[in-house]
Amino acid sequence: MLSDDALDRLRQVTQWPDLTGTRYELRGELARGGMGVVYVARDRELERDVALKLIAVEAADADTASRLRREARTMARLEHPGIVPVHDVGELADGRVFYAMKLVSGKRLDELVEGGLPLRERLRVLLRICEPVAFAHAHGVIHRDLKPENVMVGPFGEVLVMDWGVAKHRPEPPAASGEAPATASPAPHATAHGTIVGTPAYMSPEQARGDVERVDARSDVYALGAILYFMLAGRAPGRPPASPDAPTHTWVRPRSMGVAPGIAAPHELVPDLPRPLEAICLKALALEPERRYAGVARLRSRALSGRRARVRLSGRAAGPRPPFREPASNANRARARVRRHARRAAAGGAGVTW
Image (cartoon, rainbow, N blue to C red; front, side):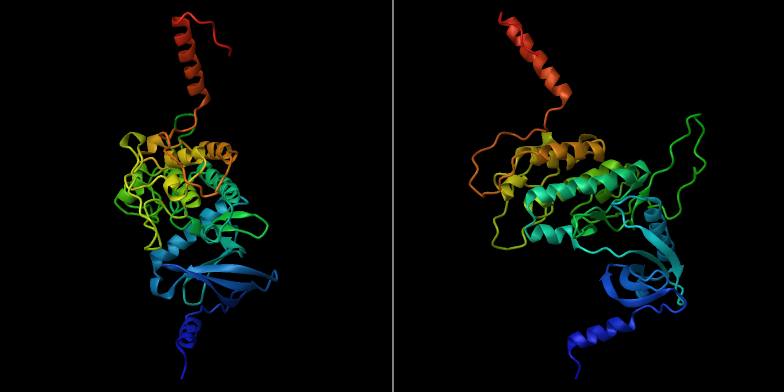
């Protein structure tokens, strides 16, 4: 009698795609999601292994096929070292669409963090994530599903942002002459208002509301802030601890800081974190897009500054902490100098040295 594992394996093999008529030879299943499946295959023409992504049999229809083609075209359009290159698009004998891409080796970011990746290295990865995301934004593409599970870190330190299947394409800006863009009509398969796209623990509030018109680069900034939170605290913002014995935290940011209720300060979960990193994280997680960083480049710049902060994870108890503030900008520092100068002048003191 076959064991349960053997039966599962047999069931899996019977669902493998028929690659007859293609240049690929199936090697095995790599990963499976809600609608798609990724297989390892051998490209006989170029004599190399590739990853083949196609729609699962139970989810195959004309709409999902069209979306898979769109995902492949999005990735092909975004030629960046941090985005997996697409090699080929085709159709199987059963009508299912597939695309071939680089086979990525390494581990997912969530696995590395849970395995004890040092904080300095986590921040290096965050900076690398920002690069392809900023590149995509410059080309009118919003990822909309950034999370640790969608980031791969290779054995040589390479960082790749995966799974662009729900990416949003912004309309092209008007030409310099003021003429309307040539593609004024809605893009095919555009997400309808009210549709919720993304992963709940990492999606921005506007995504959670289904407010598609407000989803822009700042929505990805929120997701990056949530990834930074995961890096600092070991879990996604607002998510309860995995262990029932772990202490619970009911600390909620003051409304004036603009962060969604229910998000504990990272230092309450991991004492003695560098304050600049926590402030950067919570600004990116602002409830309203206007209160977040205006773009990924700004977030990356701040994270780079925060990375230089002294990182100490000794676990010693921390005393009361003053309110968190975003690191001062040059303009804020200048205004502070003017105020100090005015106070000293009013008191009859000497001028301040600039």
